[in-house]
Length: 382
Image 1 (cartoon, rainbow, N blue to C red):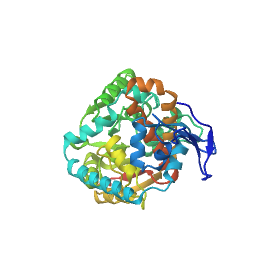
Image 2 (cartoon, rainbow, N blue to C red):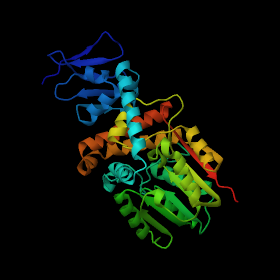
Image 3 (cartoon, rainbow, N blue to C red):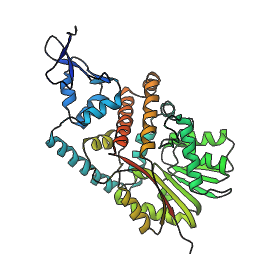
Image 4 (cartoon, rainbow, N blue to C red):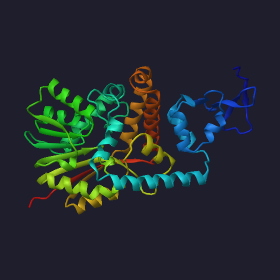
């Protein structure tokens, strides 16, 4: 279909490229940062007027594409006026989903299914955008120009130092992912490290990494729910895991960590949080349905309060928001660079979902609508 010459609309904030039939197939940012292209003769103007949930769904279904800066596209879209009624509708649906989640989180099978939904896509897919250790949480950038590889190593080093890990400490990583932290703690600090995950592909990768690094005598990773763990540990970490716990289960989560920790031990809890004043919206519902079923963000004061109620003393806080923004941007750039390979490993829908989710997360961290924090807790000696 022939495209008519570009036409400047009366609204100086945008430029439309019109089809002969009058529809607008392209939306082009006047500053040249991005272009939105509607597929199959659809109207780009409609795409830009959708609520966040509908727009996200349309994007992952391939109904429109973004060329150029995806971060600025998301930021521009979020600043457009949208239907208050639809915003309220999706906020209500997101709240109902939280209630449904709360009723299921105590059950082992739904929890395992939700974890597997996100993490058991393909190890090779995740390797296309993560670092070599497959660390899937905020890196630590001593300089914004640091490589993702260096920034993730700096993060692992900081965690181990914050925990004051010593040789032969019994160290537990709750929700250990692909094993990056447990192998690092054993290699560089001499810890005897234990990890648990509910994702089978993560387990397979972690065990291969343990064998490849000849750490079988110092590191073990098992497929199990953290609530089923027993034993006694000198230090415990939970990195990017408690987002799966849910507000209604925080008390039990901290109580379990407290029971597993030796008196005098440290528990490092690190993850994504929701700033005060930010509520659920259409983007929350999209994440619940398409990205992290069972996930729920809590406020920092929820973390501190429930940790203290379990018996811990809070001995350290660290803001990670800017580091998470840089991390998500690095992941998005890797996804875009390896787009062809990613689409060969997973469906186009999955690729688009992860691209949008991580890009929107970067914008959320940059704009302060999403937070991230590390809370260091101490169990006093009896």
